[in-house]
Amino acid sequence: MRNILIIVVAVFMLASCKTSDPKTDDRPGFLCADGRHIVNGDGEFVLLRGIGLGGWMLQEPYMLNLSEAAPAQYDIRNKITTLIGKERCDEFYAAWLNNMITRRDIDSLKAWGFNSVRLPMHYNLFTPPVEEEPVAGEITWLEKGFAITDSLLDWCEANEIYLILDLHAAPGGQGNDIPIADVDTTKPNLWESEFNRKKTVALWSELAVRYKDEPWIGGYDLINETNYPLEGNTALYELYREITGVIREADTKHIIFIEGNHFATDFAGLTPPWEDNMVYSFHKYWNPTTVETIQKYLDIRAEHNVPLWMGESGENSNEWFRSAVELLEADSIGWAWWTIKKLDSESSLMNVTVPEGYQAIVDYWKEAGPAPAPAEAYRTLMQLTENIRIENCKVNYGVLSALFDR
Figure 1: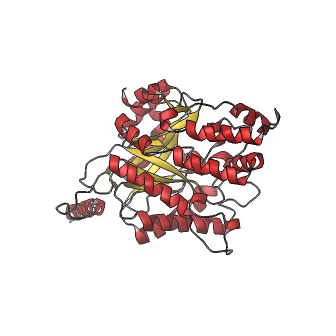
Figure 2: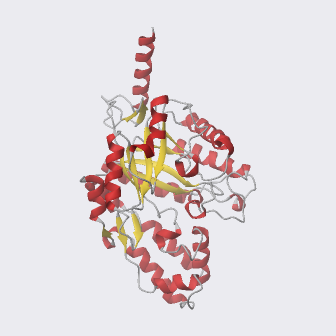
Figure 3: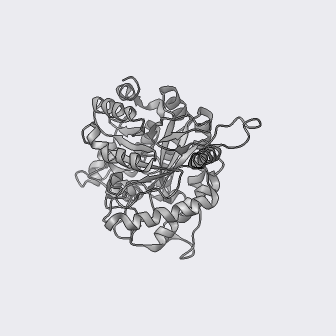
């Protein structure tokens, strides 16, 4: 009887990965969790080899050489507005979103060997902050974020690359690391505001409704790198359960990726898995590339028969990259590297050239120099939006070699 039950469960899991009858539909099946592995619609093991599209929807100051000039994206935008005016600031951000990731980027990622991308989403491209809702307590949608995601998904589908949606900046911000979630400390964060949590849940519900039938969506990475004192992670667990519930009301097919607290390293209170199609995602930065450093995650996989995914790592030397990927792949763990582009960097996949005049802007914001003329600052910032185009970037082939040519 027990063997029959196991067979029935296995057949159900495989069927849930399928899009439709393979005789009438040549699309691939959905990725899904199958025991300790992620598999495709044919039940074949898929080792995710991906890259994070950091800096696109969410600008982290350090990626723009602004760590000492602005705490987070909201302040970068305020400073640009003060310097060149709101209309030109809006023009800058429109060009940034149009240019940083294009079809050519995704085509290139495919050619280089990547089979997945992780999209760090800023909630404010999909829904306004609670303070800016036209009617207090209601939730409205902004089509900009969905339109960008739709275009990216089209490029990924054309290249047979999986797109994993990552809520990198949740409403209000999910932690005490201000830059990575664009946290404005003068306003309630995610854990201090019931409505921010309500908005987070509603956003995932809307994403699930829109993308439930898309097989090249690789899954939903619910909240990036929570870093907040949550005793026993109870509040995080409860929010994850609520998000999972609304997603499953619309979408029973896609993987749900769960990150731990403390920068996706602390999974206390977040096990056992509360549904079958779930993957635990840990991040790995600045520690040795030894089995001991990932043993606690391997223990979760062994105890609960659930897949692992290393959803973010990087910011180190090529030799470290090489060793880290060897460690992960030896244990059949897929990965997503961080990040695709940064200013003046050898550790990202691509290096963006700093435009002439940019340092004068940075110095002014750091109160270390005079204010640039608005017209000149505008020209410099618009040149930056040209420099981030892939055809104007320098590919760091040493990074590619470390990731793929070990």
